[in-house]
Length: 371
Image (cartoon, rainbow, N blue to C red; front, side, top):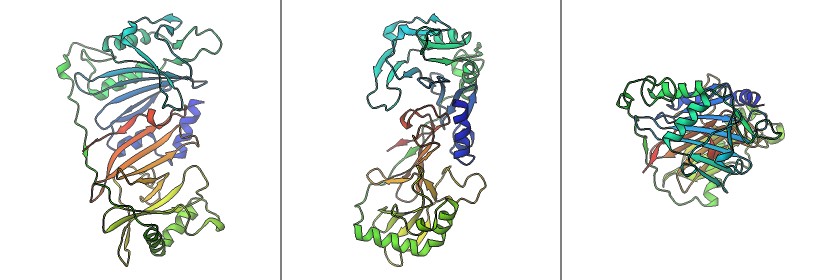
């Protein structure tokens, strides 16, 4: 099932794979190892993610920051309560100091609400060493009906990929293929890029919103008609759609989105323009850096066409959410911040496996620090 969903997401995102998305946004890596997904972001913080192959009731994450002293974390999530003393590797208990682990219920999580985590390097290293020779991690007897478990077949290769990405192979810090080289030989972590969003401006009145939307549609209606045609709109759904919006960027400029295509689907499509607030309301397609999820693979999709996009006025952020299936447990979510002059890439999350994880649990392929 998971393999099918990985194929589904590649089709649904029009050829934008984890690797392509990561490369376009300055990220380091995105790969799959026998069901273990590895994603590294733009400063080489890496995550390895494994899931219950059949029932998607258990997910395991291993995170590690770049640099000689990069912090690490092991976390497990399930749909039922977890205890550290229930963990089994090929049926054998993995025992560690319970004071080094934390179990809790994440009441904000819509899926996999029960969590167990440790950030203790010695515990994580011991778990990795024990898991190296094991085939399955479970909580409870793996032979019992209904016991959730995660295959460990691709784990070693996934961890080696992280070591290689962070320059750890052959050093005392490596998770796999450690050597005698000191920790000081591991490349230092790069700082996060800094993004400073412009302060919010007063909202547009309803009258000005309608005026800007109508004026923009009048000047670019051919683009909207092409978008309609490309995205399956029927004759009775073509024209100016109800989902069109206008928001203020500054005292002189607004951001206008014109809905297009068949917006009854779970991925709404819209075209985005920067528009002068004074007549003649000159409009130009919005220019966005990085991978917008469309138009980046050599096709004819315009770069100002976004999926599932909206503008957060209070935070000055444009957010797109391209779902690979309707529940939104896989796909790509990108945020651009308006710095007063341009939109700059602020964050991106990508999940290539449709395993019930919602966006807050997706690994990052691009992160920034806000001021």
